[in-house]
Structures are given as C-alpha cells and as structure tokens.
Image (cartoon, rainbow, N blue to C red; front, side):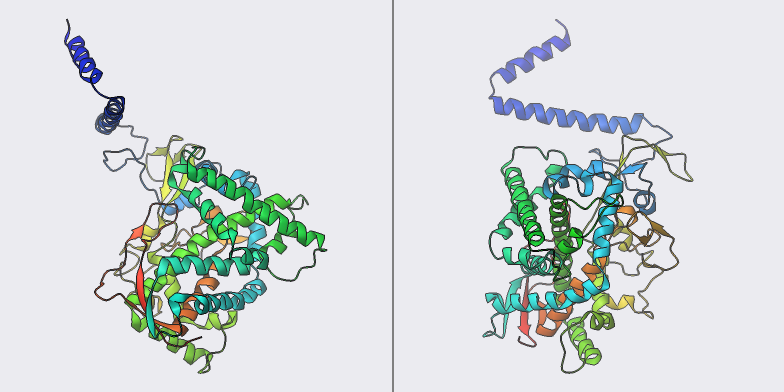
Length: 492
C-alpha cells in the first residue's frame, strides 16, 4: 500500500468520527491555506516581465497605480460599471448611474450638474440654515435650559445632513416624509451598501430583502410626487432637483422618464448624504480639538458680516475664507471615498515601463494617500486650516484640482479640469468626478458657519485622541459613537 493510500485512509478514519460542521470547517480552512500557499509560490516562482510588480503579500490583492493613470483612463480601457453596478443598482434602481451605458450616465450627470445653478445654490442657503436651526431648537440634546452638554457627532450630523439635503435638493414633499416612514426606508436602503454586495447582491439576506422593499417604496414615493406635480399643471415653485429633471431631456430629445427621475433622485440622496454626513462629522470633531479655530471662525463672521451677525447668505459664505479653509483641510485628511476601483477592459501599457496591465486586473486609486504625503503637504497628518493661507510654511508645493492651468475636458456634462495633477482630490477626477461638489461646499459651509455661531466645542474630559476611521463600507466615516462637549455661545 502506497504512502498516499495510507494518508487517505487515515484522513477518512479521522473525519468519519467528526461532525459535519467540523468537517466543513476543516475543509474550508484547508482550502484557504492551500490558496495562500499557491499564491506565495506563484509570486516566488512565476514572474511575467510584462506585468506590473506587486508588493509581496500572503493574501491576494491588487496594487495601487497613479491617480492620473486610473481616474483619467479612457472608457474603452477602464470600466466603473462592472465594479459598482452590482452594489448600486439594487439601491438606486434600473437605467441610471451604473445601470446604463456610460454615454447616458454622462447625460444624466449633465442634467444634475446644470440643475445646480448659482441661483439654485443661493436659494438653498436659507433653507439649509433654517433646517439646522430647527433641528437644534427641537433636539433635547441642545436644550436651551442647559448651558452645556454632550452629543454624538456622527448621529447628529447624519440627521442634519439628510434633513438639509432633502429640503433643498429634493423638495418640501420629500423633506416632510423624513419625519415619518421615509427615514426608515432610507435606513433599510442604506444597508444595501454593505461590502458583501459587491460580490453577492442577490444573496437572500434579511438586509437585502429590506433593501429591495425599501427601494420599491421609495421609488414609488418619488413617482407619486412627480405625478402629482404634473397633474397640478407643472407650475414650478422652487429650485429643487425634481423640478429640474422633470423639465430635462436627453440629447435626442427624449424627456427623462418619470421612473428614471425617481431613481436619479434616490441616487442623489444616497450618494450626497454619505459624503456630507461623514465630512461634517469630521469637521466638528476636529474643531473640538481646536477651540481656538472655533473662536476664529466666530470672530471672522463678526469682522466680515457685521456685529449683528445677519443670516448667512451665499454671497456672505464666499467672504468667509477661514470657514472655507476648515472645510478644505478636513476634506484633505478625511475624503469620504477612500478607494476608487476600475475594471481593466483592454490591456493597458504603463508609459515608461515594460509593463502592461492585463484584463484580469482591477485597478485601485486612493487619492487620500497623496493628500497625506509629505512631498505635497508638510506635516501631512496635522489638521491645520491655516496651511491654506498663501504665506503659510505648511502650504507645500501642491496645487488644487481646480487649478486654471490644468487641461480641461468635456466628458459630456460640461468642461471640467482633469485635475489629477493635484494630490488633493476629495471629489475624485475624470469622467466620474463628483458633480455635487458645489452643493457640498455650500452645505458644509453653512453647517460650519451655524455651529460656530451657536456653540463652543471641546473634546470629552480625559480624551486626547481623535476617534478612529471606519473603513468598513464604501464611504469612510468616524467610528461611532463619537461624543464631544458643547456650550452655548449664542442661543437661538
């Protein structure tokens, strides 16, 4: 009897006395161990001089390429739809974003972008302001009968950003529903962004069943709003995005179908809320570590806007330079999208090297890495809004993604800077650059301005370190709970 037969017989006897669960666990562990061993041997023994090298690793992964190579890659070479459609289509709905040809997506981005006119942004500022003040006034966490207290920053900012975005961008009908069942639907839909759904969006998990029911109900809600507006005669009475899309057409003259409008509004709500919620939370957490900056923000408003502190306006925000620098510096250190993926669809030669990226690969860009690199930003891990002052020694040699010297390109939704020559890319770059950038700066600017007027913030007693970052989903955010202390500066 050979050695192999002896080993096989011994294994059979051993496993024959064990439970099915244990046998399954042993088989799974053996498979993973074999996969790791084969991966290591492949790296050591099989070398293809035409393929780019990767850092030695135990578990297979793909290395990082340059921002420009990935984010400005041609659509025929790189594809985002294959990566993100399994995750986003069940959440957003059919025929929008990554569930349609790229040319159609570019037209949809054009419609949304041109709906964010300067007049629309100006009209949003008082709406955002009133929503913040209403939230603070009604919240028991910020009782006017108490001089100070604490609050969970991520939780509060998630609520404030969804209320402000829904009122300004989505319309009063949508905002009114967030006080009732719509908030529960949003939560169930949001759970659809779990990372497991990159691979198994069809999995019969309880959260996926809730996701699908929520998507249908939310889409029907938007559909009913659109239908009612059309029934009332299409009399536009606000600058919300629903009205704009109702009056938009594709290049061939086809009006946007009402169901596509509903799905686009879901996409706008979900994508925008995550980034604004995360960034605004990081801003307040950072300000709690720097009470001096909080005081400077308040003093800037007194100096620029006047001692009587009139209501914030769009034009007034443009004059608050420190306010803008606080937002910019926070986005540098805490860009909400931590990784950007593209599927290689055609072999891609890497200029200046013998390497060609094969179609078996997925490329990953992480612009947050360059934003924290000392080559571009002195003391890169230091949160310092004044590094953006023209005479600051921390300014470094970077240039912004909106630099006028950058090449411009039109992907179908208006001229934009290629932007990838900058290490500062909080809103991405290329054809998939975020089109809500202007709205995000307005929303975040108002939030910072209002909180600076109302509160002084500081870290909890005995706390010295900032909370860690949660990278477990598509969007990075502060680990919750994250408490800070507040005291009234000016009651409302």
